[in-house]
Image 1 (tube, rainbow, N blue to C red):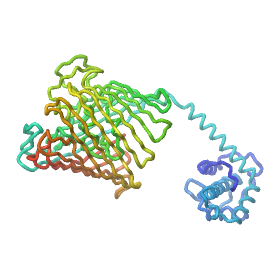
Image 2 (image 1 turned 30 degrees about the vertical axis):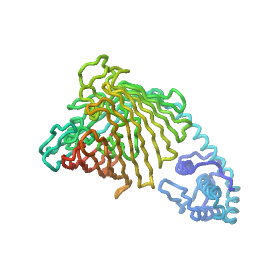
Image 3 (image 1 turned 180 degrees about the vertical axis):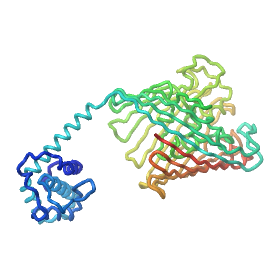
Length: 504
């Protein structure tokens, strides 16, 4: 194997580009290597033959001018690294014995310069490590997101009724302009922790778009307006502290966190103004009856930073209320309000409604992940238990498939004891037509239950997300909802939305 000096290519490039400002400290550096010298021609030939990029930021070797011996040593070291790579990967036959002989001669002639280069890079790396180890101070970072969208849609047939039979609409709703705005303040005290405060507001919490207005119960609302502070007022939607009490274990605790931030995550379908907007396609709709701001705690354990991860959370939707009164409880899904319209529960941190969730994830690579889930708890004096599965698979860097499934029980609902099913599946395409643009199409049935309605609602969505620049992305999307509210008398709902996301 060719003897290398242990200097990285990045360090080589840095050393080369900074040569002009380096003080001459060695007599050998005063003797430049001329284009007519044998060593110059030998190295240039090796660089071209083995595809080594060694030189300046514009990736040129500048072979029409003399090099200092220090610059020459940097280029020689890059060639040594390249040949070592070839040998280490079993391609030693690609290196001729003549080239090895030339390298040995060059190494011998420029040994002093190679040693100097290695010493300087080692010193720089030591200084950089020292700076990185002592650079932290308490900081607060500000970031934000604003979403504007225009949405319109309608339905076939004479009217739309809810799962209970109440009339929702007998005419198409008007087109709307909707929004969401959020500001995050992220503070760290040690570099390994996070105190997050998010202030946000949305236009009407889900019913500001045709899909959410016409079918509000089974997750047809646009996800990015379904969660947040309504009525044009800024409110706290995230407030928690995350830290690492033990190796490979993180703990999050706070009065305002959201369950969907921690479990049932999927790289291809997770909403928040990025991919799909249909609420029932961004999360398992029956797994998380508490899907809004709640008080609670989350444990995330990744043993040995390996392929297995375990997450556990506890959330109480009305933790600040010590009494069982009739006020509206925030943090629960629209499905929860449908199944338990009378409210109830005894509230508080350990009262009702509350939810506990455990998720086991196996992700041996970035291309595949499988998550097994369980959620259980009490919702307004009714017990629920749900099991779920969530998977994603990248077939190649541009094509991925994904899906979710859920089965569970909800007791003492307005429809009796129920055993609903849920499923969704889809396909995602990356770098479609434009670099960093992506598209997706998915279908799902959010609430399969014969005791609620006489049919099964099916949601479809297709979107195309493309960048205007690093901070602005535009997404046209189409939703189709058949048998809305699980009633075959309801005509098909079709909506179109143009979503623009500004990030800063």
